[in-house]
Image 1 (cartoon, rainbow, N blue to C red):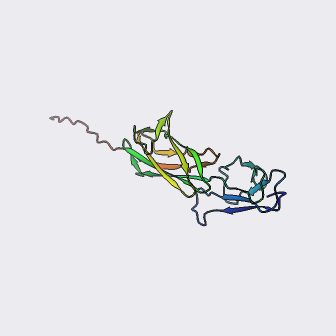
Image 2: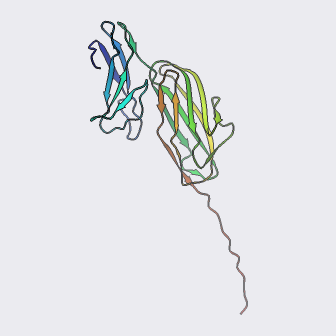
Image 3: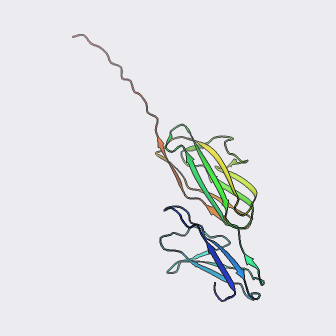
Length: 215
């Protein structure tokens, strides 16, 4: 936090996370002093051994050395804070591997790690080499222009929502689902990590006709 000694940031994150998983930091801002006369600026350096993915609330990645994210915050009255929704989206696939020509189910979980989020929209583009199974989306999901969409009116702090849909595997060696996200009316965004499913091709028996000859 720059220029405002009485504006205090508090950051939290999961204590344990696996390699390749998304790590989400939640930053809460509180003004413990007088009213701010200019917009506070919050910066946070990108940790080593990580790659920046996204930032909520118009956070901007600054390509410095080291890289950091910068936010321009609103004016804060005494005792006022800034705690925004923090959305996380994860997905699992079943079965894996999947047989070509059969159905593959995706299960999506959306989690709110921050304050209440409203007007949520979840989108998931149907992967290449698959075809959406009509009517398979739970929770009122609909296929719209090549992507499955859901709408949630509200997600309270700590609440999660589980959704799913199915596709038919048409071919390929693997199915990559890497374009799914959740967004809220408050500007919070959650982007999911790629999910890769290996494809097992159906085996065929080939019969060759034999002709017996007399010699």
